[in-house]
Image (cartoon, rainbow, N blue to C red; front, side, top):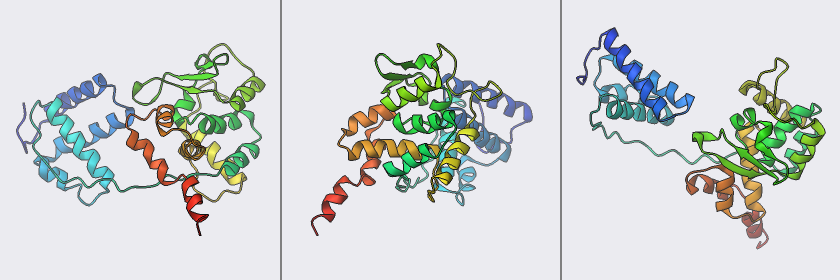
Length: 269
């Protein structure tokens, strides 16, 4: 369908990008992945370069950006051009970056320093249920089962549903807020779902009010949820299920920041 290093006409580029969009949609890739793949492939088609030369133009960028470009090119060649992608550029493994974790006391300070009830609930769902930012945004009243004390996440990452426990503190604050039969739990003054920026600002503001100097994000509370469970003796495979991790290796990063065993070692001195 196409030659390596070929100069594509605007019409050819338009058709190829259209096919790429179809393929990523069929696989239900996330918005961010679709956006990244389309951007990379558009640049490639306009460059007139061979795949290797095009990828080499990313060599001065971050490892993450380089990896994204590589997998976008691989996907494009194999699923749009229907050709084998022979490039075997050495991809450096991601360096192990340990997650930032708050203490239980710091989390409680964030909750207690927040006077707005809805904002307080946002913090509590991120921590007491270990939810992702988008999972909080999309949480609906029908997802909460007060009788079984569970939360059914139907809009989890990768379209994989999962069930997590409904912590008593979450149950109590939801009843205080006022239970509804349907609709999203977190609605803005304009009657729309909270956007990402709103939730990020809620967390940033709460951390500042609590006097926490760390760079706290919504995901920090999810990291703290997992680490605190691990420190309390929870089986790592249960934590994996609660977080919705496909690979146990992803969950195992919390063993590097959980300090229950580190404390034991300190007692030996």
